[in-house]
Image (cartoon, rainbow, N blue to C red; front, side):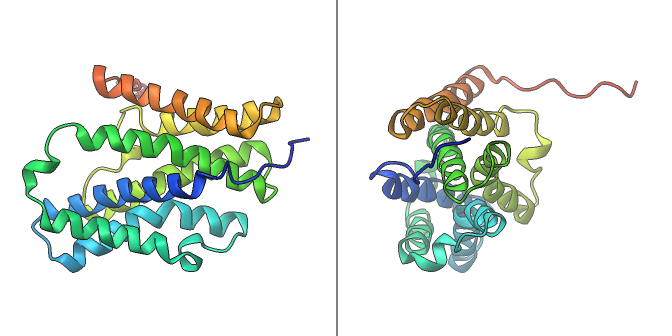
Length: 209
């Protein structure tokens, strides 16, 4: 039987907010690159930041986190404002991709941990970690008219899956949550980092020739 799991150590809420900020910035940038208004930037930031966690909470029967914690929406809206008032050159290059990799790995662990806390079995808990980390970006891409991360071969969802699966397996094996969380997040981040640096991707389906 899976041991009882808390929502991660004391620092987890602050790590959660940091992950929210990273994803919210990516959403705001998607709107900014299309020369949209501040309202649109704020909407994209909010939906990208809280999208995955909202779907997760609805599926596991938990109170939707950002409805009960004003900090979450405040962080997303602040991220939109930061993008709005800063020059575009600040956001060029791969810096955001690296921050996003950190948020992806940490969010996947956080989502899996919260699912376990609410009594979700191990395999669905792994899926909830992936949902937490990826659904916000999927919604962002759909709204922006870009190919979804699900339709791109890059190692993105795979990295989230590695983080959440590693966390669930380590906790099930008896490793303390405070140790399992950083180990699992590091594994997912390392995979994503290697993929970014070496432009690694999964092989595409070649059945139709």
